[in-house]
Figure 1: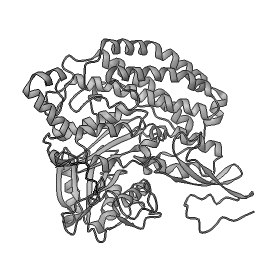
Figure 2: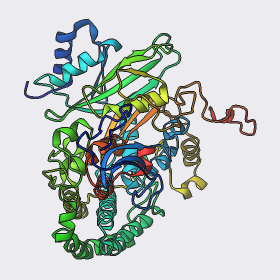
Figure 3: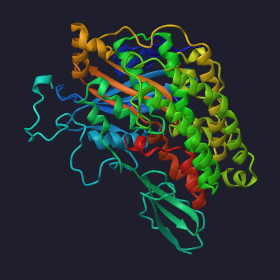
Length: 168
Length: 406
């Protein structure tokens, strides 16, 4: 493979992992696939070590909360980048809100350490095997994960602001 | 000889022989040498650092949560406050992300105008960082002189958007107005006079024996480590990897410009300094090319539902008034989708991961903040180093508190 594109990377993924590659889609030029949460390190590790793909750089880790999707409320999103082939892709893992557990990526990329701490801090995702899973930006005493959708931005007891006219 | 507490969690503990007593030193959060709100609890043996544990989040302002309630055009002022040494790059990066999501094609002229502003911002940011490296080595002179030049860049921002530090420059779909003749005059004057002043600054430090002895081999990092720790920007290039978003994934017509990516070798403070110095020169070249090749056309795209109409039109025409109202109230329809857009910020790859559900605000917006990701390598970089080298390492990494804590 001289040049990587969304089609041939997806083909490699399908050939190697078959059933595990779910919902492949391309949005704004970037390939995005969903993988089972319990196989994240296996699949990403394989992409990292694959001689043609070599996803050597973990660009970003973050989570998204979809409260209406029962059983798969939390998505952990990884953005990977292969610098040698200049190819970017996105990998998503969905987790249930009552047991948001996923294996840490710190064994593959050192940069995952703080990014996973941030994700834990804001969404409560438990990264199993993480060397130091503590809050990072919020104070340690905080007893909730503030970016979850059930926490309103503003104090709900306020009645001096009526936003209903503006579709909010 | 004392033993380290075995319960101590830090994985970067230096296990070499310790002859003195271990003291705990609390560096920061508000220490004059840390240039921002950073705290490091260090274990030191005399002046040698055994371990360091950064605590961050002192100025966390919940930008990602705020962004989930703000219409797209109201998020630009939030991005100002990420890397406030080069806010225009953040602003433009955000505008380009929304343009990508909404499928807006901006005229070539907008791209070139943005490139000029972004490169000015890069110069301003690098000037701050490099002159502060000088200050931390005890060379205050260069700093005081070069800040006069940064002031000129801020005056140019003022001419374009009226603000200096938190610029909120440009809009989704273009820039708010043409470059004024005063701006062009100031820019040309700057391009003519700055290189000599910059050379003077360069002469003060770059081949200065005292400065070189001080910064060479201070806080080095290898290319593999830098890549694993998520380094991007000048810090990565100082370690010898020629990754630059402007070249790898060109945005805003960067493919039209001819410039080189300077790379270092050892990834130490001196290399980071030199890489930034050279990037300033390259940025000047890019600005000159953008002025010379400035295409004809309008300074905004023809997207009335995103780009505010001229104010006098709002008072006169019904259509302009409607669009004005819709944009200000955030009632513009936007496609459903997910987009990741990255720009080369002054200290690394600044990414925006935006999920839209078609509503008036983003469903989720995540900022990939370069210094948040690479600052985690700091304990490893300073392990075993002298305390004064740790100060230098931090200032040469260009960690900006606003971006670190979002």
